Length: 435
Image (cartoon, rainbow, N blue to C red; front, side, top):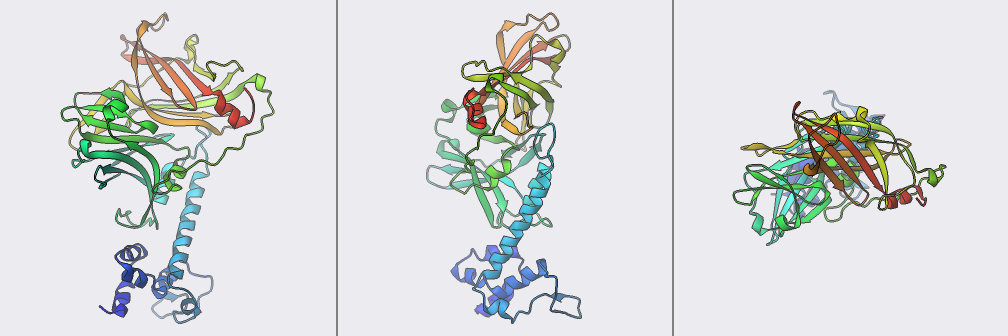
């Protein structure tokens, strides 16, 4: 087919379709870069203040197609201009949405709207031992105060024995279009969030829970892989991402390299380090993906310089102060579904923690699946006589220890102890001090 005829056909395509056509072959790529087509697309979206003429059909042509705007520009110039300007508009829209901050969490309060405006989504890519990739598109989202939980399920998972790696990506369309659904076949940017090796999955990972159908294994960074009990194959994959640094991790990395945080500049603190941490607050959300068991903020947390195994201790709920003991709503469990089956893994839930410093800025944040473990000791509290369960979480920046009591009479759990241990190294790096 003559090039002139192809260009005429391409002129009826929108920007996203035109970019897709340009990926077919080298010939189509050069034709799809035609300045005449892209100038028409550009001028229809970004009309200058002054127009050159108006047609009787009320269609406005903002730039003459025979002027220097076409002949003095290299092929693809107006395509690049259009893409750069569209990306800039989306960034501006997203920045406006994330500017308002929730005073309780210290995080943007319109994260859900910002994700929709940017077209942000997540995929997992399973790579088998032969190098073939299996892309699993996002299946289900659950939004909470400080995190988003993503669940992938399919009836066509590849066999676990042939898989080598699992990669988690944030994905944004090159040209987000609010008027239409985002196509998985359109031009998109991938940002690598995490990569895991699946060999010896059950031996190398921590089992966080199980029910009659599935077993849950937690990989690094809070990603959960569920295996069918009967045949030891993947049933579903789930991860929970904290809103803090969510956009950076999901958009600023490349397809092969994760986003690296810039070096932190220590904040000048006029308080003597001997005084310790002061006026901190923590926002805690305990949920089972679709339901919330506890959501609350604990303020005025402080600690002296005294260390506990190279940690600084912040007590949110004290065993001795029964006025702060809190009941959970319902019985903790992690709900799941695969489109055909559904279930609930008891004594397992997602914990979201957002620790804010004295200025109200996020200091330590995470969202991760945790499990409740029956303790060998019994409660010595007169008001809470029952079995004791503990939940522990730890990473390189700190630890969280939760103690719960099960009251048989009222069939509910009470949090009687909640302690955060912040790494002394993190505090020193953050403030440039020597605690």
